Image 1 (cartoon, rainbow, N blue to C red):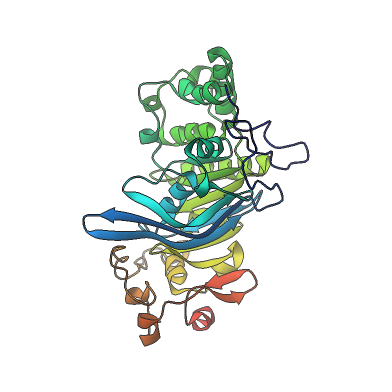
Image 2 (image 1 turned 90 degrees about the vertical axis):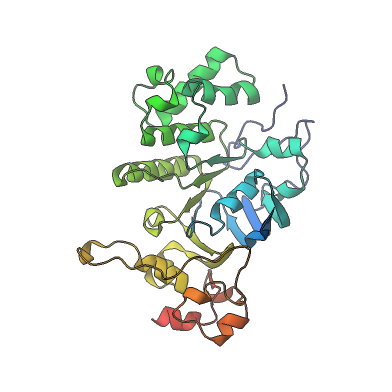
Length: 356
């Protein structure tokens, strides 16, 4: 039995080194480096209809104990970026260029067995459809315990005890009995808690939660978000929270990255972006949030549709839907302008947007 991660975090809270199946530290590992750093990431899919550019130069950093909210409509590249980080981009997709560094280790350059040493042990993911992600023919206890049997070499009885502890951790009532239940015997919110328990099983340093509140009612959404925030603070994990709903992440995120057409179009600390967005797309997303002081009025919508990623328009990809668009927007692709301290916007007219 080979170990892929030593005792977890060291006594002073620092991340422990990741060990390869051969018993060596991963090349480039530096405990002083940022926890997770994505740089100029490009992911493409070769399809019958042509080349689909799903991710086009995404960059962001997540530090220990920090929550990054990744926002955008369906098809903006949020989940594909997460899949690239995890090394599970489905065929016919591939990472074309860029880097994904965990404590200085470029995960994209690792061998398959080395990449598996990082996955689950150091970086884990909560998928958005818990019913599809869980195997319907095995109990939840068996599925959680499998992580301990495979990665820690525990006996089945000991693995089951750890599964009960994790179900208790995510606040599933009567965990000792519920550990023997099958996925279909749980409600949607409870299944999502089981998925969180599985992701936390091996004490990862980074947790990616991909639309964790999809199809849940607002009360359960709030409970799941509160649980994630509580666990993140207790364990000082880096948390990437992927969603299309800016209201969901407002209270739990430290940083926000807004994605559109495979790119990050705005990055900011959480509070400034809600007070004064610097990109028209962010502004439109905020306007579309239902408000209690506008009961009975029609919801604001973003006119038009996201672009076909096989035929992204020239210039700014948001220009066909943008009320600020001018000729420059249809010709020149905007860089990420430095608009304020720790704030960036990919809009030629960001000053006008902020003033409005």
